[in-house]
Image 1 (cartoon, rainbow, N blue to C red):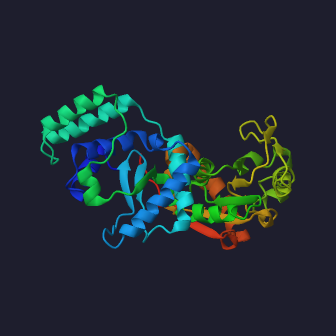
Image 2: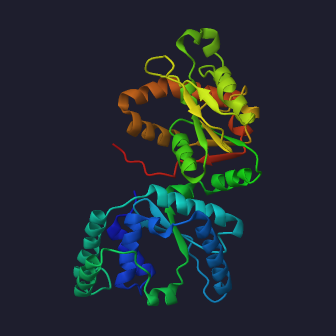
Length: 367
């Protein structure tokens, strides 16, 4: 479970004992608003990031930091420009995370004001090395100014040399995959990425994160389930036979390989009929996510293949949280066995360029 703001403030007071009121306010500001106030131009922000990284390299011998990822709550963290953890070729991707966070994480003044009250309460309880009246006075003046972005105090800067970027914590789980896709994109040609894996392993979420960080199209295999008239016993007996891979190849993969625009009709699982056509312009990066995306009929068309997995216990708990008890039973009795048959028969994971176990990526709230 993610730490509360109270826990984070106390934790930071221990890690950075010389924090001043403004440093706590900055921490809360970032918790609420993320990094949106820092982004004006993506190209300029990358240039500034590279310059700052050189500063860190120059200071490394004198001010070596062991920090890399420091949580600030609300689904966000600080990624420190630690040369032991970050190589120069990671900087463009870090800048993408920074910009994507700015675009997707939005806070409000009312939320911010509410959270600053936590700081004051901790100070009055002597749980932080702050004088309560000083916090109250600072906040009163700060609110009158309209709550502008805050800088670290001179003391904090001199003592801790803060060089970091605020990004969504979710991105950190997939660093290796993001880096591999970034390298693929540097080829300059259209790239098609497949994300296959077990249900509830996070395929759709990962695809969404990719769409936030990269300019890309996302295609879902759920839109290509086999129509009812084609579900013959012979077809369904074959591994992955419940997906209309012939239509997916014709309407999506082959046009993608030729750099053409895409037009297809998603399959509606609830009605068994095709929805109205969906049009997608050609893109330099396309993501295909979902079980059966790496069917042997399709696998050769991808430039990079990722397999997501998780333990059986985590899978069932996530499905229970997502689908409810009745639907979980259907997954256990029908959909999971079909998937496992496909994975084993087609040796899907063995044909992938990368496998990620997401079991420990996200908090599971048991019901």
